[in-house]
Length: 307
Image (cartoon, rainbow, N blue to C red; front, top):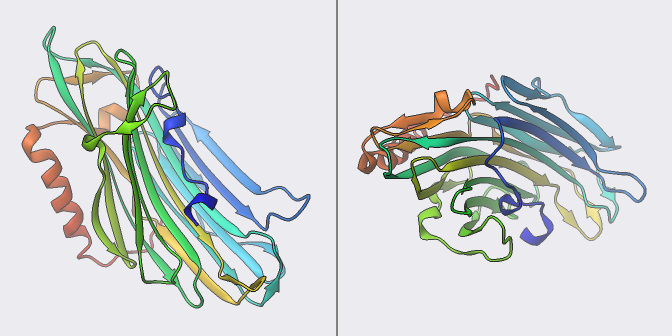
C-alpha cells in the first residue's frame, strides 16, 4: 500500500541557496478517466498561508465529499492541516479516491561563529496528529519529512517518519527513513543513524513523532533546511465498491520546525524564519527537552482549533 501513496520525496529537493519559502497543497481525486486530480496550491516567502481555513467540504462525485485543509507559517516554521472524506452511499467504481493535504517550509543560511571552527547542527521537526474512522477500514497516513543540506560539503541528510493504518483506528504501522547522500548524486543514498526519527506515540488518537537531522558544519558553510507534513485518507474499498464511511487525518495542532546550535554560533540569513526557529542551548539537553515536551503535550486533550 505504501508504494501507491505519494510520499514526499525529500531527496529530490535542493534546499540551500534559496530564501524562505512555504507552500500549502491539497489534492482530491476520484481520478476518473479524462478527469485530472483536483489540486490547489499556495506559496509565499513570508507570512501565513491558509488553504481552506474554514474546513469547507468539496463534493467530488455523488455520495463522496472531501475536506483538505492546510496552514503554513513561513516565519515560525509551523505546519498544520487536515485531510478527510465522507462516503454517504455505496459507490461502485474502480477509480482511486483520496484526499491529500501537504504543508512545507524551507530556508537557508550561513553558519557563523568562531573563525575556523566546526559546530554540530541539530534540526528537528516535531509533529502530532490523530486518525479517526467511523466505519470500514480506510487507509490513513500521517507523515513528516525533514531534510537538510550543506552545499559546501555537497551533503544532503533526510529524516522521514510516517504513521499509517488500513485497519480503521487500530493497528498503526510506521515507516521511517534515515539516509544521507551527495547533493549531486541522487541515487547514492546510504543509511545515516544521526537522521533516525523518533516515535513518541503510535496511538491512533495521539500520534506523535520527531524527525531529526544532526550534522557538522564549518563556520562559513551554507546550509539549508526543509520540513514537510502530509496527511492522506483513502476510503474503504472492497469488491469494486466504496462502502459508506468517513475518516480523517487531523494534524491541526501540529508540525513545528526548529534548529539548535551550540552557544556562540548562529545562522546568518535574510530569512525571517531563522530569527524565530534557531536556539542556542547546550547540546546535551536540547533533544531530551523536546521529547519530554511532546510527551507532556499528549497528556492534554487535543483541540480542533485551526488558528
